[in-house]
Image (cartoon, rainbow, N blue to C red; front, side):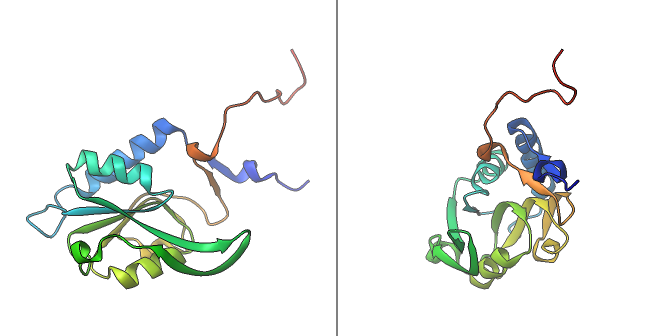
Length: 166
């Protein structure tokens, strides 16, 4: 019997993403280039927005922006390209900037982002082996074939018990 997608899945609750994002903030605290401080956070939309908000709050960073990278047209993967930049006059080469995403998978998105902000510090909450070399900091590694179900992609619903009804 083939495995269903959810059987190799890692389900992340809102509580878990909050705890893991706070753990990432704790790891980043005091490691910025300006007397240990970071000057800005750039969230990779859309998955990086919730972790970036939590990290910005925990590290008291007020300058928060986004970068949007598109790598899918409908369900066909294409070369990733930036479709919305942060304020590059403010971000410069990325020195003192934290780039935050929920997950690095293959690292292709981060390659594109790093090309525009080469001196930024890239941090993700979760990392898969192929993308790990593109990340400076992360909290949890998962296998390449694990599908992560984030809370913003899920809805609660009733599930039948494995062994019939009671």
